[in-house]
Amino acid sequence: MAEVRLVDIEKKYGSFLAVPKQSLTIHDGEFLVLLGPSGCGKTTTMRMIAGLEDITSGDIMIREERINDKPPKDRDIAMVFQNYGLYPHMTVRQNIEYPLKLRGIAKAARTKRVQETADKVELGALLDRRPSELSGGQRQRVALARAIVRTPSIFLMDEPLSNLDAKLRVTMRAELKHLHHELGVTTVYVTHDQMEAMTLATRVAVMREGRIVQLDTPKKIYAEPADLFVAGFIGSPSMNLIDGKVSDGVFRADGVNVPVDLPNRDGVVLGIRPEELEITDDATAPIGGQLYALELTGESTLVTLRNGPVSACARGHADFEAEINSPCYLTPKPGARFHLFDRASGERLDGVKH
Amino acid sequence: MRKPFLYLAERALLVLISVVVLFPIAWMFLTAFKQPRDAYSLSLNFEPTLQNFVTVFSDPWNLGSMVLNSVVVATVTVVIAVPCAALAAYSFSRFRVKGRKFLFFLILSTQFIPAVVIVLPFFLMFRQLDLLDTRIALIIVNLAIVTPFVIWMIKGFIDAIPTDSEEAAMIDGASRLRVIKDIVMPMAAPGILTSSIFCFILTWNEFLFALILSRRDAVTLPVGLVSFRTERGDLWELMSAAGVMITVPIFIMALFIQKHFTRGMTAGAVK
Image (cartoon, rainbow over all chains, first blue to last red):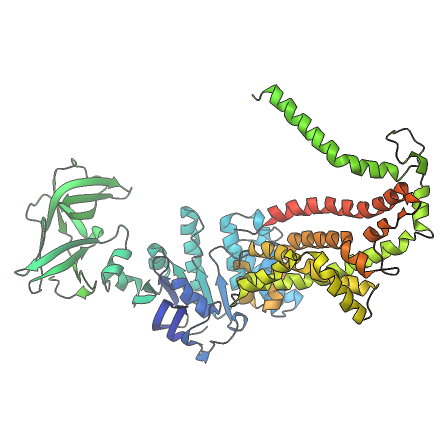
């Protein structure tokens, strides 16, 4: 168990600023997800915690102890890599046993711990195989077993599920969640998959260009994105973002009229989630246009309408049917909320009327 | 369907090349078992004898001491060069030090210097140190020759190993040296073995330096061969017998290389 604090850490590669100066506290027992598109500095941040990457300036504290200059082996962390990082010349048993062996644990105790851990991740029958004889999911489990076998105080996971197929990813996701619940170890998890972030995290740190743009619970990030980037990044399908202007207390774009509490201005973006819109025949609805596409996803139908440059998507009933190019209107469901952003800075604007 | 003519032409060419390549080797093997009078004959009809092997191992040829010199020089060279080169190769492969590329080029560039040019300074140096005609001198010279080559070769193998496993080991609790011992070397083992064998062959066949730096005590097999050119003429049957003694160990090693080389290619890392 441990709290991790990053204090004013900064990372430069030569003159390139990978992670600008910022601080972050990861609470004891928390599952913190670093989320962002590739190249946003999330992996670099994790590797700095691991000690695989030097820190240009700032401090990393684990349990209030400054660990900047400690080698990875003395930080009491375990890490799961995207490509698993298994030892191909060792059997599954030797792979899992290796961290224990390095810590000088006696043979009998090692054997017992390896067996227990392997059983926990359902590898018990595969202990004498080599990694090359395992499937992707099984290899991932070996990496996981090797990480949990010595109960470190912090887990670091670098996109551990991204090499698995979609179905296995969902299963493993649940297993990870369960494992965290069971072990309660502070976990830092890097991903570019917003769905993984939402489902696993206690808190999510959304990163962009090295900077944390929002740090909050998944619920809060979904309901109240701090800026345009987070709004567009979280949610699938992503939030409708409509460019327009405010005049006379109404947000206006082609076919869109939404009353807002803002002074007249240009360069405003209106956001609303597809699942918070419903289809209506009412021609006075806030959003109107021609039906552009219908996509059946199974449990629902995604309805996209267009009006000039404006495009909006709603999650409708699976049975919904209509002619393409016919007039179509969308209205917010009860309790749904609009979001307003400044086009130029991306910042969130207050002024939504409920 | 391929044209039968092309197929035949291809086969004929292959046979021709094989004959050109294999004839001298076959000739050497046959001559090694011939009487002196049959040495120049191309006939396969001769009375085989082992006398040549007995002769080369007895006075005045004493091939035995040359075999020993060659074995000692080549083995010690490999045993010193390969571990040093492996560590150097790892450093060149993994550490991003300023001037790394230049240093690597510098080490490789020593290979471009013609041996004939530097053999005299070496001779003078070893004379000063009183090391002429010793195995130590030959080992030092061979180390200088093969180490850059082996560094370059092993670096190629280490470059191909993904760093994931190494980083995993460091987090699992291993020091850098432990990582090299437990993770990198086993993963690079086929490559290191291949490099060792190449290193052995290079040293085993080294001629020029051995010729200049040895006289009587430290003579190696390739130099020993020259001594069969006497005022009585070239003793081909004895030279062939000695040639067989040089070739057979290398031949066996070549078989090894093949087996391990293909394994080195396929072992790889786990994705």
